Image: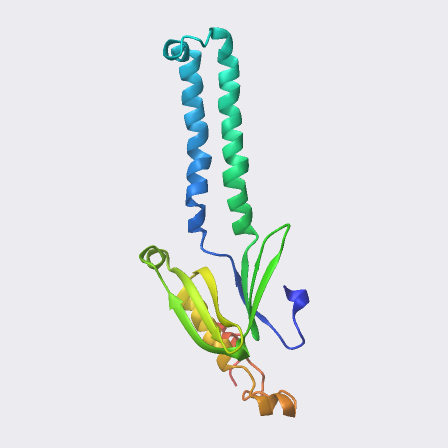
Length: 199
């Protein structure tokens, strides 16, 4: 992201969506081999032949291999795509825009210029409130409403956005050379983080 910055633009924070959507994939990753191991032991004891008489003992290795392939299918077809989708999604807030990038092979970029934001709304479900995440909707004049899903620490992220919008230079300032109210050019997160020495 840093190589895409325009002169004078700074990255404030970069994060991924709240990982709650990985709960199902994590459960499948853990429980599918456990179930396969139980089923393999059940077939090895000859219980499969008792249940289905047509299954002779010579079919037992094939049954065990089938259970192993089922686990591999769950991992590769269900768990891995969800992990890669979460891993490949990033929300980046800069001093001028909010960018959402997702995808690994096929990239999708969504950008909102902070100067065009007219209204900011935070939506939180009960589960999101417990996990301190939420959806941030930005209403702009020309794009309508753009929503960023499952932003972690949504209250802090919202405050960063509002601070960045407040520190945007006025149009007449940018036309005059981009001077800001603070002569030292310190941004609000630098002041809050102690990045500027008091004089």
